Image (tube, rainbow, N blue to C red; front, top):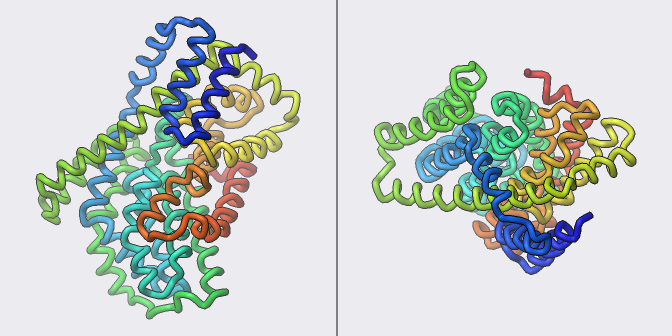
Length: 423
């Protein structure tokens, strides 16, 4: 391996250990590699332009802004009330409500931290008032927030589709079954924990009339996934166009129907969206530079040759991929991993007969779990900020849910028909 690549990885590892932001660490590492390898900076210019000259990638800012509008409006609360009417009678009812609401909310915004913040901001204090331990309440909402990336639309899947040249619409369809399975696994795990510890005694079961009233109150929120996913699946809109429709629809609802939107709140939404989008694309730029450097030195061929000696069939390769993703997700940002891993690994997996759609679902699923594992664990930090629970106790409370998600991940990877059955 060339000295420039070795230098790049050493600098990247040191900066990550020192706590630098992943985008800054990758940028400095790439510049170090260029300097050591005496390479011209212009080799990245055209590649960088082509990366952002992508219509599917334009969906990212649209869905981020749509999520901000719904988070700061009335849609989140109506979704929680509707979830309460459906599962409020079960053991650990508030846990079940958190998971189910995150599944609904994931169909609105496509961001895991945003889902954790929106739902957890309301559910964690409510669970504490009902006597649930603070660490458990935070763990349920942090893990359920991962459904924001596993229930379409998903920002990570949009980026994967644009990099891998795979239909984003097909990815959205394929992730539905694994996403729902993950949500059910989290609900079952929370039920067992609450049953064992006698937490969250079942409440009164809502009548069908009460459920209908809750559904009607949440109708404007529930129309978002119908419009977005219905447009994509029906071939009416692309994922990018659906994101634009989601922004316009949510703005119209919050402005003219619920009358919750003000100019001050709209400025806050624009500012918060710009910060989030800027952070995402900063990572995209840095990861693009790192990926281009690795391709320049044919690193992907070295990896493919190494893997071909170790792997004998698709199943073993998928297991190796899932283990790798669980490790990388603990210290690398999701978008960065997608941009780095796809060019290097996807060719070897497709050569072994792995469907690019299945690869993308497993990649997204595995990296999503990094959001609830330290030290990166963005969802964990969001939940800590809401509940003021210690990070160590939250990590311990997260373990049962993490194990349940890992089981679903391996089922998804080893049984690809689960992802392809709806296509």
